[in-house]
Length: 108
Image (cartoon, rainbow, N blue to C red; front, side, top):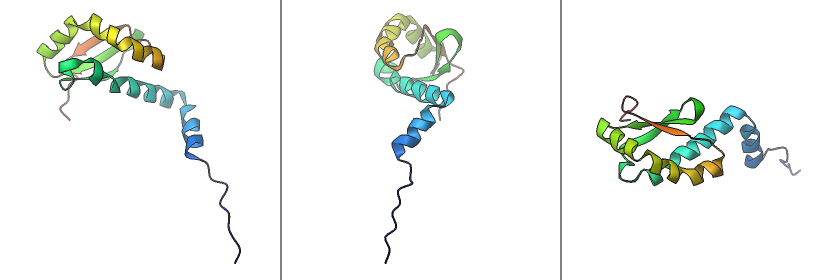
């Protein structure tokens, strides 16, 4: 019986590398990584707020459960930006400001 060698397969590393060449996919993965750090820096409001998206000129939009959470986070904006800084440098993303938005909150 003749052996069949399957050597024309692409490795998972090659597939991922080719996907990351697409600028939109690379940007989405980078932002997703940044958003995953939010729970580490947001303290007691980690379950009442979450990153929603990025706006123009380095604006990061944070969805908040209610106006109290939004106000508390707004008062801590400078501290939050300072805590975000190491992650931003690693991911090479520029976030200049945070916007806390109650309207963007979704329970799901």
